[in-house]
Length: 380
Image (cartoon, rainbow, N blue to C red; front, side, top):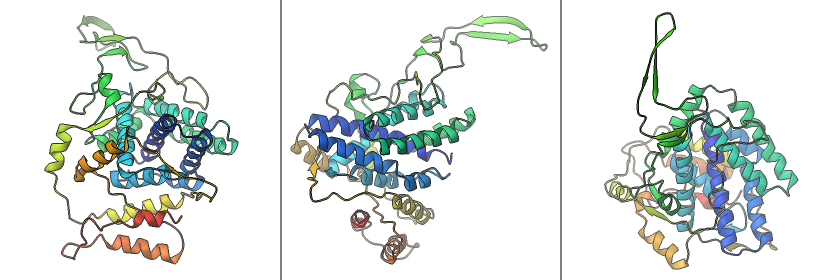
């Protein structure tokens, strides 16, 4: 597992979240000033200095539930509100899009180029807000400083860490299904054509060398695909052509996007048993998450700001149906944490951590565990 994976996971998922929200704000004809405020508020929160300081510290990945908590907080950082079903769909779309990008990266290092594509788009969203642009540019500099010196092996470890994180997620997405890059079981189709990774050659030739290093024989074989020579390498600088298209906005052409649980996911959910054994890492994860959430300094809407709800479904009825039909085992129970320095917050965090009891200790019902934590975070 790589301790440098979390910032890349967060930035790429955040980029996908912004693509989706931008598309939905346009589809629902939200006034331009309100839509811009939502995007600016989310990006300002996402690139908060204290938040990024915690994010870029070497650390293990959070659990899916903990990471969902962070993005639930981000999505509600402005005057926009999402119902649970829409938030579930938003998170499903984000994670499946980035999983697809990680799987299709020609080489592990290209994950950084995918990240830069997301960063370039985020920068374009706030091109008229100089103060937010400075925050985004500072994140570029950190990415370049930390990740460009890494070896191919280190990037391979990052890629493996991401794939382990995504391995049980098989949500069917209409765009992927229509483009025939995803099967009906939710698994992606890897191409056997197109340009090979930069620095490699088209497969089909075996060269045999002598002990002296001289080539003595060549054998050709059928590679089973339709490959072409590698494209030029994308730019890893602040400005430049990334070449790779993974990570760009696939919602730029307006078309409806639906998500569906795959049959295998539903079946596995029905046979999933809740693990009630105490997790020795749970307390440490809560501590890390509390520090991370403590950096989210979200400004509360003033009385002049009128909030509104965004629906990621075509109708309210579809949204309600999605909430009812979603398997309970696959719904995200958001861990809500308020991380401030006051005594009340410390007491609340201690109470939350106390819920991770030793074996044999009486436990609370699953429905009550952590229900009131997001309300606490709203007090930030």
